[in-house]
Image (cartoon, rainbow, N blue to C red; front, side, top):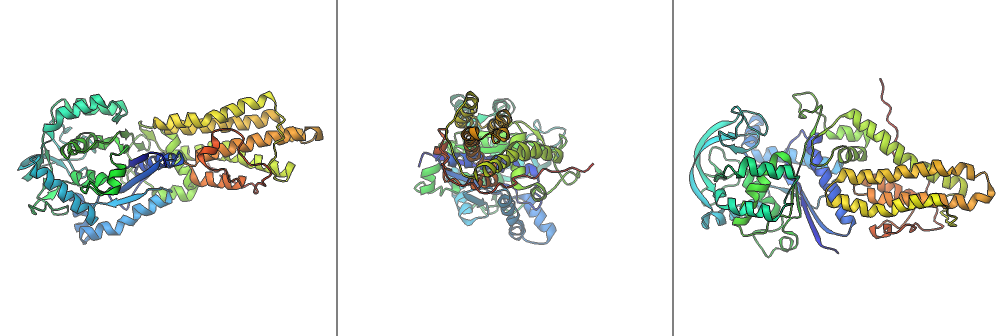
Length: 510
């Protein structure tokens, strides 16, 4: 097995109302994890739920249950949604897991005993929905700069983490590791908006509510939810037991994939915590944009919310995955619309991909009883297609290494478009009328089938169910990544399975 790859999504606030925007990060992370596995990497892909904090305590009280009862009721919703989307995570962490809670207590105590955490009094602004502390200069018209909702003034005894102590080390790390934060705009934002004005010590405990991990040496305090949440990336691996096999194997993380609104937690607080713990920092944090609807946030109150499973039920899981991965330039905000999802499904999946597979396999059955042959009666027109297919693996690898997921998919689709043009240019139906052209016809169909096989293997990271269906249609055992390095590995004399409809064209009523 090749080297390891540890990828994480943020752990999500447990909710009964996930929308398509919540799914975006996890679908992308899944595609990256699947592609790394395809390449032979030893992948550890982690996601989970962030279950502590004041807003959970308030919602539980409103529901007349304990906070633990409240989160237990809805936690399966997240797992069911990820299963519906084909998310192939290796570990699902809950911050209410006993192992995690005990580890966070040990981390907090270690930082306290070495002088990086000290006791004081906090007075300032706090956003309950975001679980974020803000200075008056950072607030925008008295509101949270992230979510736009009212912040409240709080005053309470608290413990503080010496964030300011690590400012110079953090800037030096940024300088020495220019790809630590991507896209570059996020790095500039962290430097200009948060670090250069001067880092203030961070309030890391609360006493005004109880639903959190208790500070074991001062149980009137609970650990600030972001210290709790960020620690999940190492507690899941067995830290603070540094002899833990998973920790030794997978840390530091290769990629923290996060939404742009929480980049500052992952690129300021988290690195400083790790420096204080004398642990290596993750290799990269990528802060992607948001999926929006009509350039606005997705919410029930705006009337533009749908449970993602409604889209899955209506159009299929791979149509939803494909749209999320293909439509948005990674790193930028993207606009989600059901109309665009339908259009993309009809154009790319039903027509370019589905129609190509269906008619190629149908012609193979019609003209050769579904038997794969290759007499190698070649012409110049074959070379362009074969060259494009042969180069595809390298191009997709380059795009994926740069996290340009949408561009990687488009490169595959471009080859599939070339396959459709190849059919139009070589006119197999006309050749079939001439017995002397039978070998040439068999060669053309072989070139198409082999091109489809290679594209299907590359698509397995993005639309896995469809990829599997195509490879089943081809009845091939050549499905590993190393079989697509060269053109011509599809077995001869195998019999193709009957063609299936991969995607039905979606008719839209006016």
